Length: 344
Image (cartoon, rainbow, N blue to C red; front, side, top):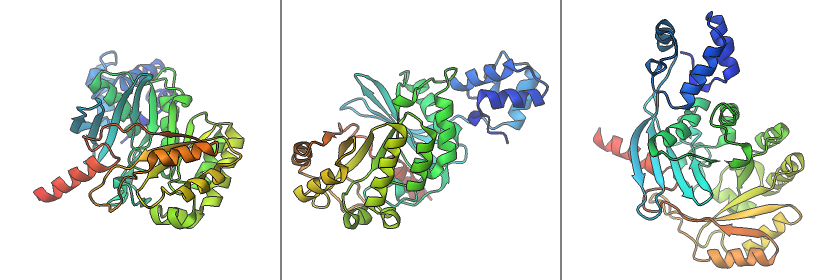
């Protein structure tokens, strides 16, 4: 069936032309999809026979809320969406003074194997389509009544492992006749797929690239992130320097603070040396506890931050949101999977 939610207006126009329909039908349908139409019957400005044909030929399945949790502490909302095939993905709505940010997933599960992340438990099931990524924003807005102004691609999955669908999503979400969210309001997180980072750099997109670094040396990073065994920290950093040269966009480095693993003064010094000579921002992330992991949150976050700053490295501590609602990536999906197995 035709994946109509993932089509651009230009593709829709060409498709409708093949159906013998006027080009303006594309704009009408694209607007309905952007507004969160859940069936073709809602598209009342389309002829009935066209709606019937679209219903027969196209998949139009709105994601269903499997679980919705709201933090009593800060109002963060976490959604577990059930997709058309029964797979579930997570989306988080975070409200800041500068606007509302949505963290979206790009895969059902993840193959990267990072030991501190619940998303990877059970591996990757499949990639999400561009429309399924876009729907997380559209239906979060529709359910919450809140306008989304910023996007972070830091939910379940590795965005650069789903490169083509993610790129199509970025095209759709950036459309002035769609959600119209500018590239400078989008952050894309990667564990360090260097060939894909180079490919992304060649496109010159003005989004923010966030690199999940988490350690300044190969021994520690390879233990935390299996992807490093094939690449290495030095190769990753060379790729990041090329990215900055190609785009002019400062890279943000994510660093989950793990007790006794990557939070020593020596590691702060090594991290500062690694970033010397390039515009960079280090985002220190207080680790969320995951029941299945022996890793614990660091007790030296502020000391680590201050040591980096003494080296001239810009470092901030990520505000911890939704700690009472399984807001760590993959936790809610994992709990749902366990509940389903327990009910069998």
